[in-house]
Image (cartoon, rainbow, N blue to C red):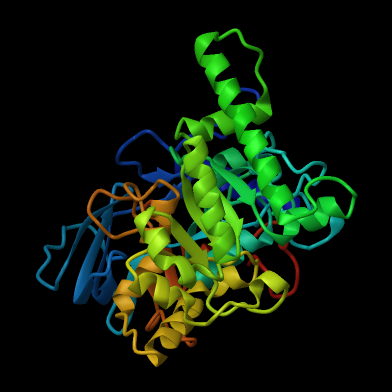
Length: 460
């Protein structure tokens, strides 16, 4: 009862911050998008103010580095980024960033927060509709629990401002993903990233053949995986043709999602480990006229980095996960560096509620692995793996992923070099709203599920 009361009081305070009374649930539908005011004074009830960070080292997210830099956030956007001579407007909150770093907010392209929520019990296991190999009709957002404590932990420990929530990988077609802003909300609609395209989670390799082969059904082999995939895409292509010819053709929710992929509206996010299988999937995509946006896990991406580059496909990888099943045995620590060095789109991802809190450290490991074999990638350039490249693979790079004027004011002030294990986020902004401040107990978001527990969300 205590945590529920605190949760409700927090939202009442947020409503007061806007100068209006909280509305009843029945008086107005929940808005999916943000405040349409281009210069909002609050973000979803959270106060925002023009803010200048000066004298910091700036990584702009697209490979640029500025010493003694200045970043100006206002109206929910990045307004200016430059050197120490950048004009500072009167009335702005000025933060001294001496000895600190400013970066774009971290984007995790592969997360299951909310649909495999904490605590990890069966009651919270909602990420896999493992009742058939083709389940393209399900949507991850319909499983997301906004109170998952993992969201606030990812914000305060990892500087995560945006993340893609995916279905699991038991199925060949796992369903739609959803892109979220990492803000506290009562509903998943309150977290959705405005205008972000949906993704389709697909999987190849061991998982689908193990899950369904163990039930004595297809697929039970890798050739079975591809056969079911191709038959499904053939059905989707026929459904698309029928719907275009006759709008009265009965809807099929499963084929609606696949037709969205064929139309280019939904982006394919494909779980795949082995290089040979990724190459087969690329061939299949060309056969049916769709595009793979990113291969996830991709532990053998280094073997086909040129193929990924030439087909404009990103690879979301770990720094050093290895050997936990057969298709992960040919993983190498230099994978990310080699893919980047070949000119392909490389990025880090978590697939883990703990790893999402340390993606900056994972990038540091991947950089060190590359440097040991002579691939010396600058730190600022490697930040692309954490922000700009994931934004590209999510179809939102025009809105976020780098500190460029006009983009969303999603930024992190780190208390030291962000590629050091000793560094943590000091402040995190999302659309210009200060969502976390390590120096202010009132700016330490925590799930109301944890409120009242020792050391978690104590309210004074």
